[in-house]
Length: 415
Image (cartoon, rainbow, N blue to C red; front, side, top):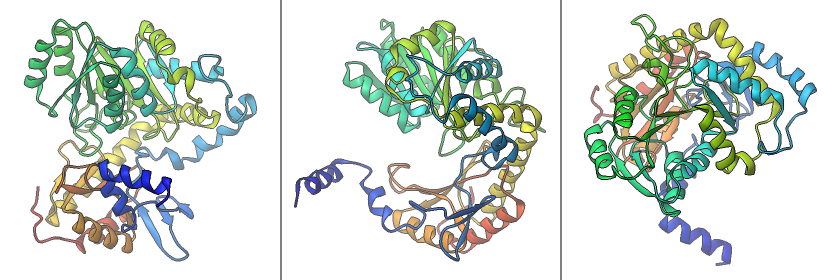
């Protein structure tokens, strides 16, 4: 065995993602190459097509001709890619977008970086320093945990609490009352279930205990918005989970992702002007990471314009298709994890053998989903995650339900 093989073998033994590596070779739903795309239909071989229920382009903007048409002019103006790190210089399109994003979500300012991951691994360690304390929701996204691990390795304290257990969170905040650097880290919309964090309650705790709430709203931004009603449960404008609950940004740092609803390689932190300057000078990705491609920035700009014109209509479509999907799956006897109506729908499968078998059945019957074993989910609680978009159709949802009917498991119960 050569050195490379020894390193790979050693890492496999100690890494909890080994199961994903094993399933990678057995599951046709992993590492799929899209040879051709027609709407949400994907050709994956010479003759086989699947319908995409794994995309997180919730508003369908990835396929919107109006958005795509505006990209070439920005490339003419700025080139295909800025060659500076942001600490040195930024094309004006960056500044214009940061101002527009801040207006949309209602914050003083915003800072754009390429991904939510880069924000987490750069901003979290900068905020907490070597002596602060982090309180991480156990159901929070893995990228927040990666940022917290970097901070912990630098000397900060990491505590965790179960999703929604605010009583335990407050106990820990009291235990660390004398620490001036306290950060609570949660998802705005949880990426496996579509649950919403209780932002008002978290904000009250943060104000009471002089802490900061870091909200990863990678999935919620663009879908969730202000002034929800029974007719429009997501709310209006898609301006994020904070505005959905009618909150301001006191003691909150809002991180929005644009690669989901806006189909653009970009993410941002919505914050105060003081925090904006802190991130620019103290978060290493601002000066060590490459910037967003010009086309992605222009895609975001075009998407924000389309959102003003017809974004709420797109969200209406997503809501309706999600309700149809959840009701249909439950009628087949599946346990479905979705209490909010958000277009993330997780279907309980159980063990990994059933997961592989059902994944093959779905793929053979023309359906692409996200296959989620441990450690994406707790052991024995593997799911298939479905995501709905405004570019999906009723006929495609009918095909999805027909495919799931072929893998109905006797142990599933309606939920």
